Amino acid sequence: MSQEPSSVEALLARFRYRPDEDSGGLGELPTSTVEADREPGVDELQLLTFGVGRGEYAVALGMVTEILRARSLTEIPRARPPLLGVLNLRGIITPVYDPSLRLGLPSTVPPCAGPDCEHPPRPARILVVRTALGPAGLWVDRVRGVQRVRGGGLERPRGGPTGGVVGVLPTMEGSCSVVDPEWLLR
Amino acid sequence: MSAESQAVEVCAFWVGDAVYGIDVARVDEILPRVVPLPIDQAPAHVEGVVHVHGTAVPIVDLRRLLPVGSPPRTAKPKVILARIGRRRVGLRVDGMAGVRRYTLADIHPGGPVPGVLAVTADECRLLDLRGLLADRAAPPRVPL
Image (tube, rainbow over all chains, first blue to last red; front, top):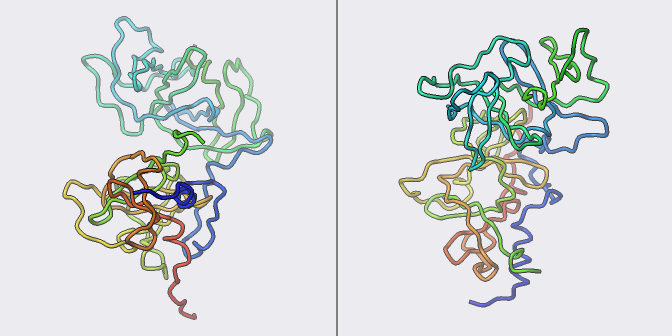
């Protein structure tokens, strides 16, 4: 069957997705806009908040490429504590680290690699972050969500050696430390 | 325009006994189990809303807008979170049929059903999603 390619192209113009296409006439549907995709404003930051042990932390959302449900890892013989094991992430070998040591907390990660590994707890996640040496995973106990903050919404970390804690974000439940993911892996 | 850019990638799914497709770029997510919250005075094809990552998304049952038959027995019902412009809707479908790639030569304009723009060589009906959902008469509001 032969037809004018231009007519097919005209039809496909209605088929293809454009972010700026007209979405009027859907009046009866309750509104749901693609809020998460809104470009962050001038001095607006997007933070991914997560929990490790009893603490709440946040990293810049741009550093995180993926959030995985925690799964059992491949054991590395004689791996030293922050390194838990490795993960085959679509063909890329990704090391997974336990951030609790760096944060000065008791480790909450169950044995997750090797023969005596346990089933990971349900809310546990692995944050895959971009680093200079390729992707790396951070085992966290739970992921809260994304929070947008204006530059002024962050407080300076209170006293003591701050290390990789960049700022403190006041939240409803208390506060949440904004950390540098590269520091957690070091 | 190169042949590469003229190809379309289609997210294909079953509704009844036919395969339909929407642009892959529209698809945000595919949810396995969704129990929408019914909304009062919604059009018949809107099942209700669900909360997805903090926003309320209306769920549209495509089986009430397109002809139905029995889907293949292996099909697992899903909800496709799709975008129309800056808006988002959930489409309830009978099952997924994968991502397919078509060139312009595979696409034949005209569809057997309203809302279908074109049919591909392997009988995938390409939907005009906005045309299908827009401007449907809302049921008359009952004055309070």
